[in-house]
Each structure stands twice: as structure tokens, then as C-alpha cells.
Length: 402
Image (cartoon, rainbow, N blue to C red; front, top):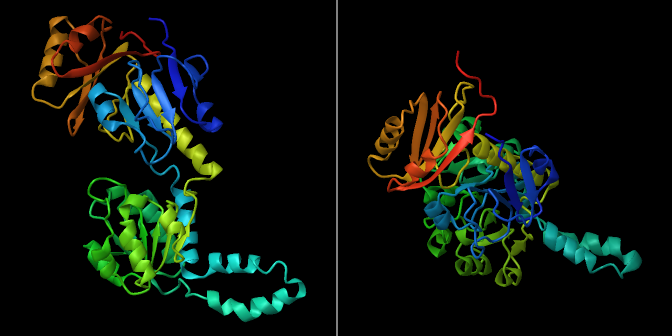
């Protein structure tokens, strides 16, 4: 079987440190390739883009994936990857900076100082007389509430502990890995309301999904400490903006720092608007591109899935005695595996290894055999009602069993 050349279409400028991982003899890359096997994307909106029938995978070099039509990808069996953690350190550093911006009058003080540039020798005296307007509390000894303890939330919590803050966290879905990485001194809150009632500072690190839209609204603002400060570098939609501005205007909240900017927030003196710089570091762009490329290669070459937003994590160790493998995507309905294995048995294919996982309505199978699987078997499997797609992947390291 002749080695397949995979076509990769880039929809944004992707870091060269990621793209250079693609082997030159097995991949073709361009921004205008027809019939690509994979699409690499950062911020480009794919909702109104016609995805070619050839597309098997979309890799988002970043954590958010609101710019990708997940429902359509599910229908067509397109695996969508994101890169959680790739930009975690960059966002964490901005979150720590945001706590300081929320606490001290740094931004307003700088803006005021700039108005004095024509005062010549008077500037030092004016600065000394006016600086008290911009004072604010230290972080040390204050209570920080971290809502969402994923990769970024855990890093923020741990660094805040090192700054001398009392840290409390809320995340009913915290992963085992995140729990292992979280400082032992971080206290757990069982309810969001309990966290908001205790925190001097609150920082949000949640995905924007149906259940988190407008998570902080007037009722929850009412339950916060008077003068509390809020940081949101996650998603603007987590906060009901009208209720937030009301809380800022009446002094219920002292400050709001976000990198999701609107005209209304720009007009609010207590809001500090950052132009979406959370992941804007060269290191984060490199890390996300490297993760996206590796996940894409792993899927195309091995059928392995990790960090998919719509399919289950799935991997099967590749043995050199398996000349090729089948990867099958199907609807998560009864008797699918039975039909697939029965069909393979009917043409004399003995399965040497297999794994099957599902996520919501999507199921994924990796099937190996020490016999060479004929290419025409893919069409037979596709004919099974409920099968979405079938791929045959050649093993470049194949060694016939003795």
C-alpha cells in the first residue's frame, strides 16, 4: 500500500514551532488546500464555512471552541480537538496581574499621570499630592475565590497561595489530575454561593456552556461581600453584564477586570478592560500549536483521540504484527459492535485487539488484526445502519508474524 499523503489546511497563522512537526514526506500544508484531511484553526469562525467532505479532524490551537460547528461535526463524524492547558500559564499570569489591577488604582493612576505631561517641573509635586486617590489594599491576607479548578484555575489558586492569600475553590467536576496538582491549603467550597459570600476577590475559570451562561447575575452579586473585586478572563457570557454594571455603579463591587470588552464596559469607570490578551504570548501560541499538531498526527496516523471536545478519549497500542487498522465512528446505539465484528468474521478477518468507547451520542472503535484487512471492507462496514465513517490506516512498521 502506497504511503498516504495527508493534507492539512491552516485557517489562521499557526505557530511554525507546531507546523514544523509535520513530516515533509507525509504531509502537505497550505491555507487553501482543496479536500483537506484536517483543518488547523485558532480564531477563524467555521460556522459559515463549508467543510469539505474529506475533513476528518479539526484541531483548535486554543482551549475555546465556540468558533467550530460541533453539531455538524458530530453528524459527520469529524473529531474536534482543542488544546487545554497549552495557554494555561499565559492566562494564569494575566489573572494574577488582574488581581493587582483590581486591587490598586494602577490603571487609573497611570492614566492620570499621563495627563500631567505638560506640567514640566511641577509633575513630582502634583504626583505626590494626588497619589492617595489611587491607593488600594494588598492581596496578602485577603480571600480569593477561584470558580473552576481546571488547568488554569489550579495554577491561579496555587500562585495566590504563594502570594499569601487565603484561597477557596469551587468546582463540582474537578478532575483527579487537577486535584493532585492543587495546593493542599486551598479550601473547598461546596456551593458557589458559599464561595461568593466569603471572597474578597473572585476569579472565573469556567467554559461557557448552557449551564454557565449568566452564572453571575444580580442575585449572586447580591450575595457577594460589599466591595468585592471580580476577574473574568474565561468568557464574557459567564456574567450578566447589565447586572454587573449595576453592581459596579452602586459600589456592591469595587472593580471588574476582564479581557472580553464591550462598549458598555468601556463606559463603566469601575471596569478595567483588557483587549483579550489572555493567551497572547508567543509561548502560549507555540504550546497550543504543538499540541494541536501532535493530536492531529496521532489521530490521522494511529486513530488515537485525546483532548477531543466531541469524542471519547481512545487509544490502542499499535503492534508491528498488525498490517493495518480500522477506525470506525458510529452512533452510540445497541448492537453496533456486534454487527461490525460479525461482518469482519464473515470475510475471515480475526480481530487481534480492539477498543470501543463512547461519549454522548458518538461511539468510536479501533480494530486491529494480524491479517491484512482488505480496503473494500470499509464500504461494507459503512453500509451498516448507524455507522458514520470508516478509515483504514496502514502500519508503516508492519512485520509479518513468524
